[in-house]
Length: 192
Image 1 (cartoon, rainbow, N blue to C red):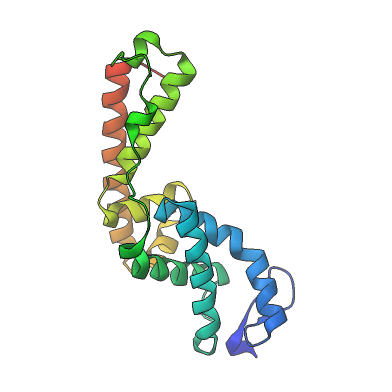
Image 2 (cartoon, one colour; image 1 turned 90 degrees about the vertical axis):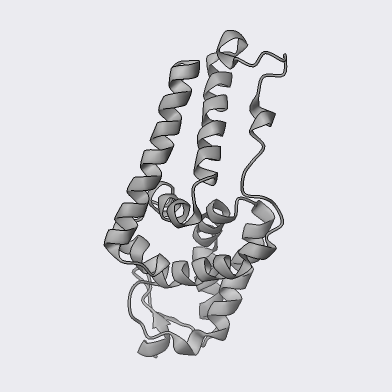
């Protein structure tokens, strides 16, 4: 069983061949996998489909699990590969329409008429757009680092790259997003 079981979080190992154990694994980790895929896909419905695809793939390949590494890392790698395979068929574009966050009074400068809360929302929307516009080779490690809180080694394992490559990609993404934020703050002022 050791070659097909995940170590539990302080519990008995999960036997991937056992349907009840697999269900428990799904219940314990589906929200984490959903959050990860949602940040990559940018669409709730796509992320829900990808979560299902991830666990179906895990079930089908359960005999291939060797027991190396953590359960979270193994699931994350499967989820990431599922995302990569599905990227072409995802239903919505990654880049949100920032104009939806523009003031409705026709004034192009939000600092003149917007409250601080509206300004903060405006700036956050532009930063999100800057993240979405990053090259995917930078965006994906950035999302894992910034939003999922992964360490560079974990990012490297998930993406199948070296830790140094993960470090460089995260640094480049951080630099690009920081530049965008500085430009926005210079143009519109500080948000709380």
